[in-house]
Image (cartoon, rainbow, N blue to C red; front, side, top):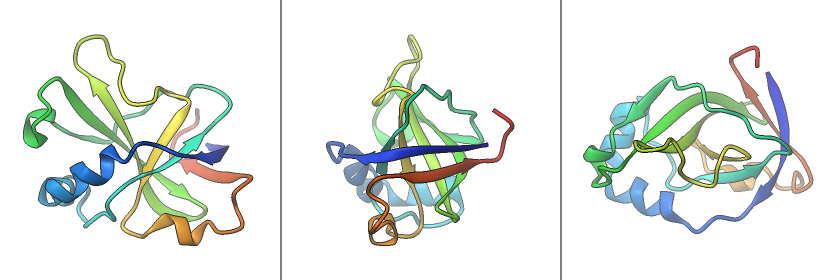
Amino acid sequence: MKVTGHITYGVGDFRVRMVMFADVFERAAGERLFPGTLNVEIPHELECHEDFRIRGTDIGEPEQDLLFERCLIEGRRGYRIRPYQLRGGGGGHGDHILEIASAFELRPLLLGHEHAVEIEFFRDR
């Protein structure tokens, strides 16, 4: 399944987490991730289909876990990361802003794609 969205700006919380707990993120993903996420706003909500998670207790955030879904962004391997509050299920920017991480720094790869970014998930819908 493919979705198209636009790059939007966040507040940098993931960069801090991914630097402070780089070993936790590497164990979960099986590779060292570039610190930070690229936020992509899509025109509709898209529920995260969890492939794996980081327990919030492992990164000093016991009130929420981080759900990961494998994806491709402009053909490169990546992960959607969705903060998931254990009480109520909310978290992050919601399901219409996808927070995408990768082992690669994504911003330079996306120069010229400011208007539309394609993300592909390994699911039907």
